[in-house]
Length: 141
Image 1: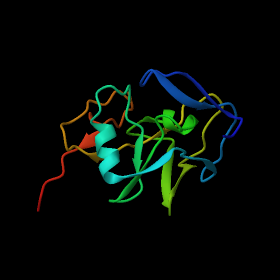
Image 2: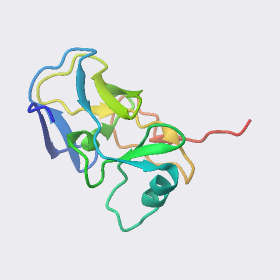
Image 3: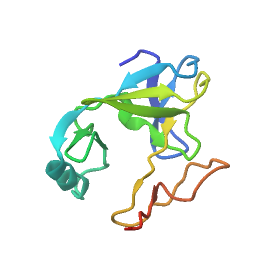
Image 4: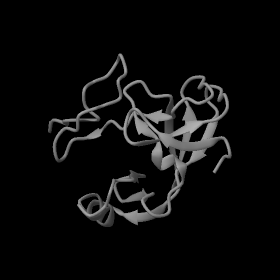
């Protein structure tokens, strides 16, 4: 994990990942780490009410990476409707990049924008562009 990333309290959601240095737009920041698991196992873990959070990041329809136990600082990238970062999936890797220049001590965020299979989740990002929800309802066509 890059030395310039650190975890501290976030105004968005409990803890967040922050940078201790300036990061230029398009810079590859870090890789999401964790255990590669099957879709069946990912769904089981996401529905487990005994877990304190959901840290599954889907690679494709068949596999996800679960950062719950074996994750790194990137599992603390909170949601924002106006995110500082985006991700790219490259095989079995998820890489985070700066979507714009990011300032020293700024929180690193991504847009979760996932399907609302079990209801909408209220967004707390505070962005001027806030959609109001982390996820969206996908209509069957």
